[in-house]
Length: 364
Image 1: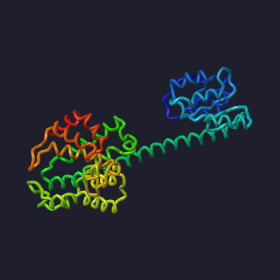
Image 2 (image 1 turned 180 degrees about the vertical axis):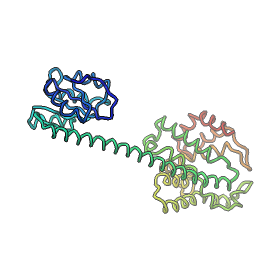
Image 3 (image 1 turned 90 degrees about the vertical axis):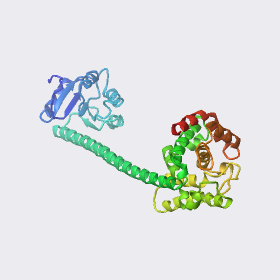
Image 4 (image 1 turned 90 degrees about the horizontal axis):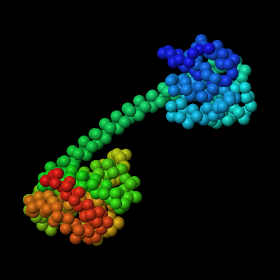
């Protein structure tokens, strides 16, 4: 009988497990011309051999002392290292109940003793072919996933590049707010994380793709593209009539994004962007624009954008005003919480105001 050593060979490796020496010899002689055969007389010796090699297939007897075939296959299928090794039961127990139990435990086939050499060879050939096809399919699937991932990344990069360009176009037209879009993105991400940490609106926020939401905020002021230069670029304070015109950018922004929506299958990203553009100037007490809605009728996206938008406007220089200090801005937000801002959001913002101050100083 062959010594149990691991050889460097291209032949498929098969282990036969049987406590009957005669059966081991018969199987070995039947397969030796085509396969590299290892024979062991017990389940214990099988697992000792498996520490040194991984076979392509296991032929397993059922009626063995100490550890029977059913116990062996349970242990094989319970380990990540051996779960995928195909097992064929080779047994004299030739009743349907035994066969069904073996198959239910994970065997790929069940062959009755005494067996035909040709039948045994054909069954082994079939199952090794199936395993090879499964492996090839797995490799193909992995390769396909990699290709799809690369294509998806390319599309995402293109979308983000177009988005960034549009957002920068808005900033170039409204040249007093340089950096506003990037700053509000960073404030918005911090605010969302803090709300989740504090369990505020956590259920709704958990249903969002946060990266998608934060990225979509770049379009919150896209409606300013439609505002006349004479108003948008005016160095001083706006008249009442001019302010009414500038207020239209929220509705314009919604309309612009709706036009984009009509020409694309994109959903969540543009949904967030449209809501942000339309609602970031609404106020908790209903005195905002363009719709004058109030409280939780204002979409959560707009309520979050409102507070970071105002914080950045307060702490930024304008031709008609100097930048407020962080402390001054926090005092204004505190006073406006429950009027301009959602009081729950305002409470979290104020409680963690030092974190916003640290982020603000990066841009100072």
